[in-house]
Length: 266
Image (cartoon, rainbow, N blue to C red; front, side, top):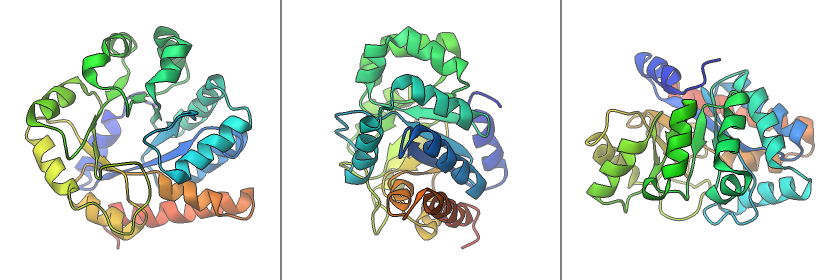
């Protein structure tokens, strides 16, 4: 499996559609069960996977992802377990890790980066790390040929958009709404303008995340973004299931609905 995400995004663009990116945290509800849920996402039609690294102070995560991360930590999930999940996911589709920066720094940036590469990971999405403060990660990612995905937001200035996009590899992550993550009844109205502004400063694909919860919303975002990123809705589907088998089925069903949206079938 190709480590980087660029070939997949080039393929989906060539197919005239957006890529579907699915997020689930490692270790929720257990390490093995989280692998089962990721396989369900892939079976349902995701093109790329984001594996969340559970963290005890997830300041940008909404209550759904916080609850799942807390359960994973209480269950004993550690960083080495995250790499096990990445290895399983990367055998199926290109896989990124989404993580706050503190755990990477504590683990050791070079050590973390080498382990991620060994596991077949494509790179990192770092929501609380800005390129100005990421010299060590940028150097390590370049050495190991890993993707560096930084975030832009509706509040980003022109200079910030230019600088952030210039340091990304793989794609640029556009956060469609201000505030914490979470599925929403309506997709953000600020997202199309943010994508337009970001396209003006980079040729990289642009993924839109935060808020998509169903196929209709995915279809709407797919009209202007190169990738539709879904997290909270998938986690919620797993949380609300009655048992592990039900969680797998619920995640697969939701992913199929989301995939129909990005394929223009809704």
